[in-house]
Amino acid sequence: MIRVVLLGAAGRMGRAIAAAAGTANDVTIKACIDREANFPEVGGVWTSSAADVVAAGDVVADFSSPEGTLEAASLCAERGAALVTGTTGLGEAHAAALKAAAARVAVLQAANFSLGVLALQRALRAALRAVPPGWDVEIVERHHRAKLDSPSGTALVLAGEVRAGRGTETAPLRHGREGRAGPRPGGEIGMHAVRGGTWVGDHTVLLAGEGEWLELRHVAQDRTAFATGALAAARFVARAAPGRYTLEHLASDPGRVT
View (cartoon, rainbow, N blue to C red):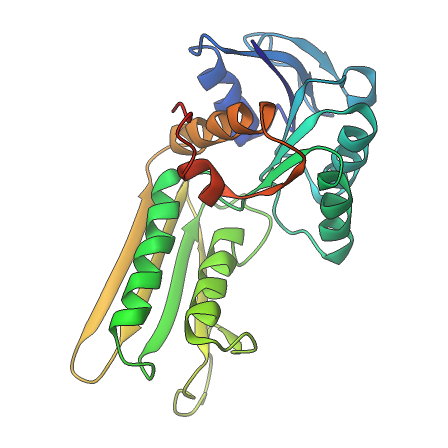
């Protein structure tokens, strides 16, 4: 049985993961960590301190905050617990903390745990190889009104795919346009964040050439897609060697269960 310590348990993703774990026969929620309300329908111990419960052999699923990710990385390395993190809005200090933790335990980080988004990334790589390099790229993402960061972590990952596919790691990101913006410069990546209502996650990549265009889109209808991927990641890191992993490793794992 895989013991999961859930950070950010009262949030949207935390509750979705807890619900998905409730139907799994190989995963149990050992503890729920959050500063907010207690949800009695979710099993496990509720506490505001991960240090009180994390132990060797656990899997910490972090969907909390950048500050929570720093604490989780340090605690996992110290206690010998694997780490799955989907927290976005991270910076250089967080990257360094995750790298240090990966020297001692398995760490899997993803901006989006939907396996459909992974398919979108792969489709985008193929499309970039197939169209001329001068085609324009615009990324449009839609999320609910309460989302804190903008653009989404997934949109930034998609922009990274464009940069890598074109060998231009410094391609500028253009966050929306206003006023007399002038002709569109070649090579830039347009980024557009839409916020409103209860959109769970909607990412579209537009590739536009002369007289034709191509649209690649993924829509998450509810958070079950993310929760299923997060539990698959927990299963993976529970038996993986120390190191840094992504969903690419998970997708190629013959022992994956979703």
